[in-house]
Length: 454
Image 1 (cartoon, rainbow, N blue to C red):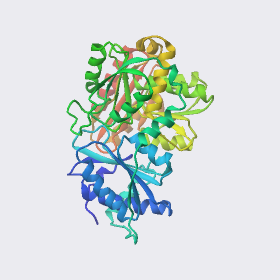
Image 2: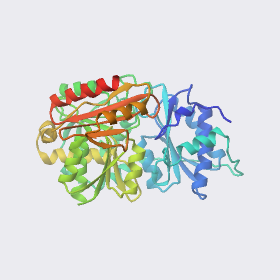
Image 3: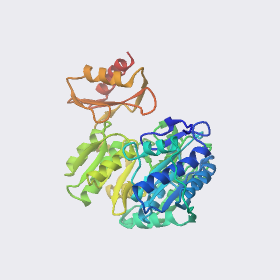
Image 4: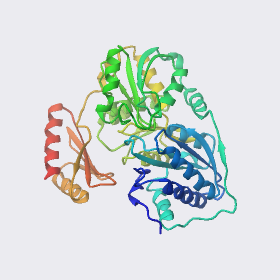
């Protein structure tokens, strides 16, 4: 049996530190293992898309991954440097049989990883085969193909993406905003360059040079400290708004003209209402972490909502199962249903948000003010002896509330609510709590935190 660090196989992707946990040998074996898996799923599978981000280790990993896929009998459609949404688009829009994107998303520079999909960019997660691929690799259950695959390079994927995805939006209704974009030296730089070729704006570019060492700051917008530079530049330049993205460009975050961050549950609600206006009565998906304004806005627009576990792959799977037109995750993933696939399409959400602001004809902060109804703790992490035991204790402690165990434990009361769930990889519990008043949010966050730490 092969010796690999099994912990790198996560619920939604493969991710670890290079080269101690994840290296060229693993990349080659992943190519071989994926070939076995995908040919089992689809005997006619032939062409597999491979893209990569700008991380320092990506070229070496890509070389071996491609070799493994070719040795497994599959052709590699090489799309070069690409964001994850561009990778998804290439797989789905052109009708290829699957794909692997080399990226560790928002993780620090020492990490790398792989996002794996089937046809139509359908995610391969813990529910759909990622652990099966792991076991094929562990047991060296590779198939020696009589005919090796070849490498086919294609270009202009991003151009095709912007042309297709922005064609449905009336760009002429978007005002010419002054926009600061901090690309964090990551893949969003390519997509934002393309986006603003089509959407007129006075663009101020920050950290657009691709650099896998992340010299300015980590490409993780969920951490507010990584937004500090963007906020400073927005205020300094008297800009209308600021935009930043994560390492692989599948999550976009916005700050207003005052340098204040827009909470994702509000943005998600706005995006849901826009889609419901175009598709009355349709279904919208969102994850179980608190963000009640999203539910309020879906119901106000006459939509049907489904609550999902946390995780981009799991949300996409549930969207497809329930024929949802739109889905949003609290971490900033926004998914759209198209005839060719269901996945993150941040250029669509960015254009529609700019159109929303244009139609409001007021400042960003004024346009958002009506939706700032609830107060959120943010995500707080606690290291515990046993995640399962602590979740059980919380369920018992708050048994007088309305309990939901879809992902961890969610407890709802009339004026406050929270979700606690365990990490997939370490003994950590994540708390998200929300309330109708700031005082109650702070009081209950302290109360639940103290109980978790006992």
